[in-house]
Image 1 (tube, rainbow, N blue to C red):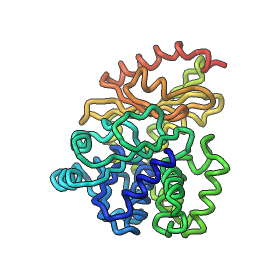
Image 2 (cartoon, rainbow, N blue to C red):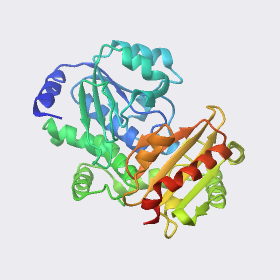
Image 3 (tube, rainbow, N blue to C red):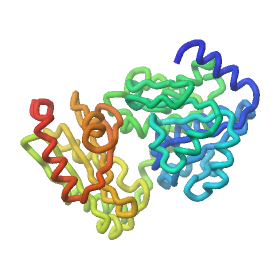
Image 4 (cartoon, rainbow, N blue to C red):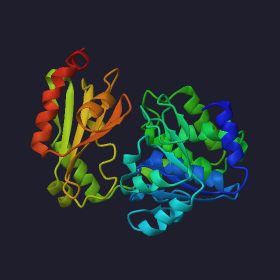
Length: 338
């Protein structure tokens, strides 16, 4: 984002505006942390700002400051559509293509509001007037911190903002263990703790809230883990029947794919989760080193993301999806076997 663009945005924010802040469908910790963190910042300037999510999000994020003000488009479509239509500014956070917001897409696309993108995924679409896009940064929450810094306002970061941004950075870096975690990330984390983020409590709120059925589902996933030694690849499947058996709730499979990647010698891991209601197999991909799962997701599974973490979907059956997955592995044998 250029100096002139920052000056223009700062000018736009001088007077109170109607502002809508949007995360992607099935928002995760980074999506909710960044949108709510930005909401609290904008509230300091008396803007009429609101976070509108395309659908619901996991219970382990519903303690975040500002959660009670979030509008769920699936549940309150008319109200949400009205707010989008009358908005002056729309911030889209943690996604780079409007199809990622499902049924909200046409509402946002047709709105006269100035659109501002803040996101760290590769190859953003050109729907926003202002784009702050940086795939090398570990999380959108860190980018929101930088955005506030660009506006010369880090001194205004309070406990609520710090808590939200810390949560998103923590979750999107796998508790600071992924390669995208830099010394700059740790400096920002230190600053957020100084400004009131309770790191131990945040970690407990996110990770220490497992239900018995969720742990049973994890056991089922581990039992379904398969290894393809020739390609240093692991994959996990979860059928709709298995999800139903263990009373699946949104967020229960968050991070499960990483168990496959944790197996000694594994460089590439995937999880395939059946969703009969949408008629798809949801796919999450993870990798180590130079294995580019963003390319794999975009090329084969109508998805995308980052080099080492991406997602996609398949409209084939679980059996056919797995067949397709296994057939594409030889195309990447040089990276997988090196």
